[in-house]
Length: 138
Image (cartoon, rainbow, N blue to C red; front, side, top):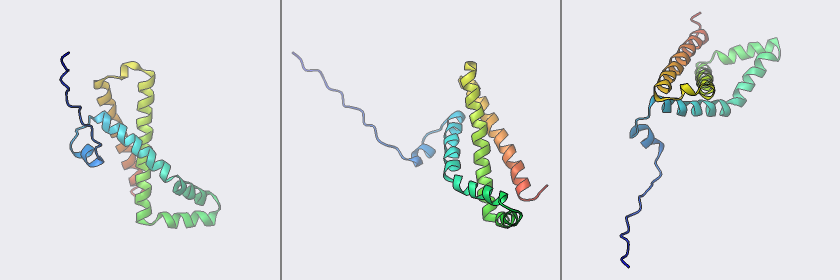
């Protein structure tokens, strides 16, 4: 019998986050999916901080004044803004996923791109409105 010619086995290597961000061009829906996971992780990690802020705002009038003083710090405001973005983006992307789960016509390349744009636009507008309120524009 003739021996079969063995093809070389393909090499699969682990890739790092740097290669994902620079070498691969993800479609917009892929970026929304990754950011949905990142925003969920941020919310989970900072949950104790959020609960602390909530507790400080509700305990008493004196603790509310301390809370207002704590929130007047620029770094705390920036952290709060990032967490607000995470919540608003995660919420909008979650609504997108629910719509895709209930309406199978929404699961296509074109609809995925258009709903991704909607998620980015709506969450950006809401985050800007929150930032304006947080930094005292109105």
